[in-house]
Image (tube, rainbow, N blue to C red):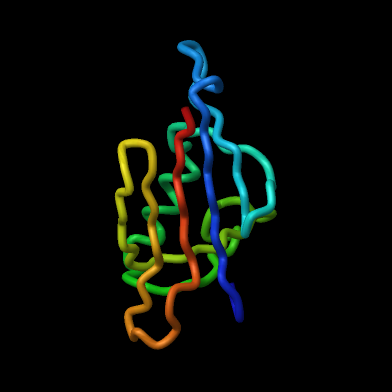
Length: 115
């Protein structure tokens, strides 16, 4: 994000829905297809990392593997306030709000469901 705009888009079509599987979202970063995403319940490691960061109000940084009880891992995080915009029942977006108001919009996350 340093020095540029980051737009993440997650797009899901109705044809990708199945009663036995969670929806599969196609992921784009600044307009380029980069892979897929699927909703999953948080693991114990996820909840431990969130608990560790609970005292962070706003900011970005890195948590070392020692703090996460996994020597080989590091976790980068961004904790901030986002503005939520609901376009319709099939679209929603979140935009990073700079607390100082000086940087402008650098990070946006869009969710679209195509029919």
